Structure formats: C-alpha cells, structure tokens
Image (cartoon, rainbow, N blue to C red; front, side):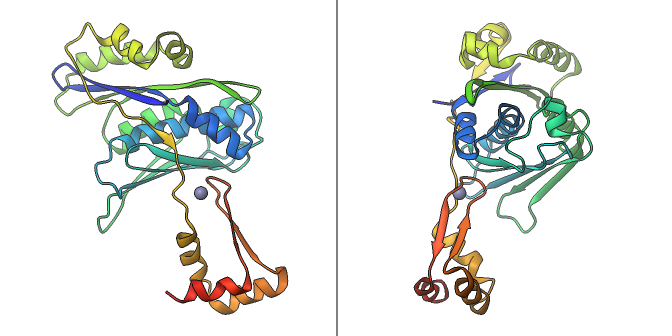
Length: 280
Ligand SMILES: [Zn+2]
C-alpha cells in the first residue's frame, strides 16, 4: 500500500513528509500505457498532487495541477480529492527523452485549490528547471511563501515501477533560518529518494535522517489512484450541449461515447438514453 509518513520537527517549526507512491505510478502506467519517460514525469506530478491533497481538510476539497512546460510530453494534468486520492494524465503518454525534455522548461505550473469558497485559490509560477522537484520548490516559495525543499524520484523500467517516492520539507511561519538550512541540506542529498525509500522504507527515512531532531510523528496517510468520474457527471456535461446536438451525434455515429481522460473509462449513450439525461 502507498503511504505518506509525516512528522513535525523542532516543536512544529517544520514538517517533513516522505511519500511512497509506487502503486499510484504503476496504476498510471497501466491506465495510460505510459512510456518509462512519461511515467517519470507524470509520476512526479502525481506524487506532489498526493502531497498537496493529503493536507486538505474538507471532504469536497479539490485540487487541480497543470504543468505545461512545452516539452515533448505536452501538458500534464493531475487532479485530486482530500485524503490524497489522485489521478492524472499526460498529453503524450509515449513521450521519450530526458526528464527536462519531456517536461520542458518554457511554461508554467498552475495549482488550483477549490475549498468550496467563492473563489478557488489559484497559484501560478514559471517552470525554472523542468525536473518537477525544483519547479515545485520554486512554486511553493514564490506562490505560497513556503520555502520548501523537495526531492521526487521515480524508478521505472520497461513499464514496471520499482519505486516512486518523494520527500517534502516545509517550514512553518515560526521557523528560523538555521533550521531551514539544516533541513535543506538533508533533502539536497536525496536526489535518488526512490532508491533510498526502496532500501529503508518511508518510515525508515524519517527514523534515519530526522529522528535525532526534536520530532513528533503524525498520522499516516494512504494515497491512491482514484478517479471521481461518474455517469451522472458525464450526463450533466452532455446536458450542457443541448438535446439537438446530442441527437445529431447519435444520428451520425449511432451512439455517443465519452472517455474519461484520467482513468480511460468509457461512457456510452444510445438514442434511448437521451431521455434520462434531460429528465433531471
Ligand atoms: Zn475517470
């Protein structure tokens, strides 16, 4: 089972998260038939999506992340619900090349957090590096004023994800500069966090690298690849097109087929299904 191990450091001055998202990335590979290089890029964004949504309090809170760096992978979109229930897709699932080549570095990261308020939180920052880890560290620093240290790493070969992992350290407002420097130094040594988690487990990383500081372990979170699509949502979307338009499509193609971009599930409507769409 995937896991997020979380601990408070230095009496609440900072929080460390160690994520093991291997099953999520394996599921994304299966759903989208990702190339290894596409999996390395999308897997990193899914992992950061699990991290961000794991902190959501309301059951109906929603996260959307768009990473558009104009690389050969095209745009990546990750969506998540509270409790780190994530899904995502990449425009070109067969993309090949270096991580920076697949992600690109001529674009932006957009993070939208919908807490059910009038306006959703909308954060934007440019892609500075194209390796996702530093791009999100920059995003948190610039857009959310949280100077974070982040390392994400996906170990995948021939469609098999051996380990997907990440570490995120975020200071709280009362954190001091010297604590930030200590924690950044530790995270900066973890470029290969996937093999470190593979060797030690996520809990082992906390125990080995952080347990000698004042520490308080928080509850575990189990992130997963879950799609929130449903026949009801698809019907509501189709309703906005109008009955005439739908009838024309069915006349021409015999049916309407809508595929979910996140989980590849197909929803099919025949002529006799139209009444049910407009009966509500
Ligand atoms: Zn779906």
